[in-house]
Image (cartoon, rainbow, N blue to C red; front, side, top):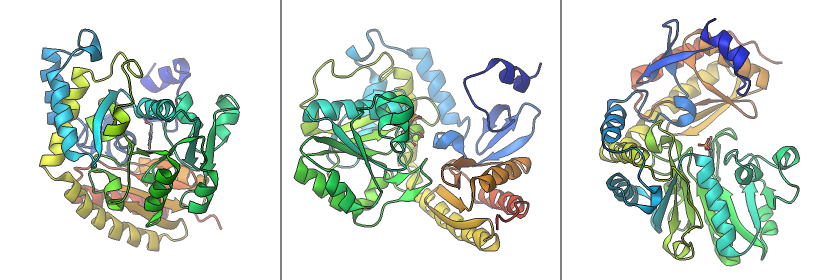
Length: 400
Ligand code: PLP
């Protein structure tokens, strides 16, 4: 029995969208078990920011594993690897965020942020944006997408209100004396690369301050240079008071790792035992993340992403004009882009047509196909991706 047959028979937990068994990767490419090469424009949901099997990450894994992987008494003991990561992160974090906590996934970081916001404020309600995505734990599902998660999985009183993105009046109407926090992504990633209107975040931040509501910024998808800034929030500064900022995905280039940073005044209200976890701040994850953050910072990857993003925008716009029967519009920043199609069927057809040509792309909600390549992708590789995309688009028939 081959891998695909045995996973289909034995693996009942994951739903597979593509008959593809990936064996290895290098840079922007991956290879399947039959040795076929694919250009990866997904970077594993935006995680492998330095590409696949980057020597820096391989070296980090080996060197730190030789020293220690998990501390005795975990977070209760100090770690040189953790100290190094803290120093690197404080160099790049937005101002005002002084204390950092680590976890193993983005959802855990958001979950902790929500829990602590409720504890610190003594309030219970959280306001989130329709179309947002913050994870798949109980707390984070409750603030993701809209009320459908509550209907499917959660207790009825999950105490979340959803408002439409960019509608400041809707937000104002929802804020009250029981509101603990507002949580939002600077660009909605899973929601289809939806941007914030200019000035929206500044108004939102000032309303939060007026009502004593904490602001949680989820940079799990947008952080670590993805949008051409170390954190996407930089474009909206100054004037935004961030209480908690959550990070994940690119932070350790593929190793499961995440973090959240809190403002100094919030930190003074967090007590020992409020949060923890077996793997929180484990030395292996810290060492890898420290090397990745240092690489992104010292090699000025944000600037590189901006210029690659400018190139991609111009080229994608030309592709969109040529295939206007399939592509309604494009939007994005840096190396996070969406093609807005006219139907989800078209998205599925295009995803398969791309794969047949050796190009991997990420379909997401609301008729969107997303491109999230490695931040180190070369221009020649982007041109190759655009060429395959162009050919795949020619095979997709118009809906109308
Ligand atoms: N927040 C955002 C903005 C995300 O895009 C994601 C994952 O896609 C998460 C949170 C959840 O992160 P994880 O899958 O690591 O739990």
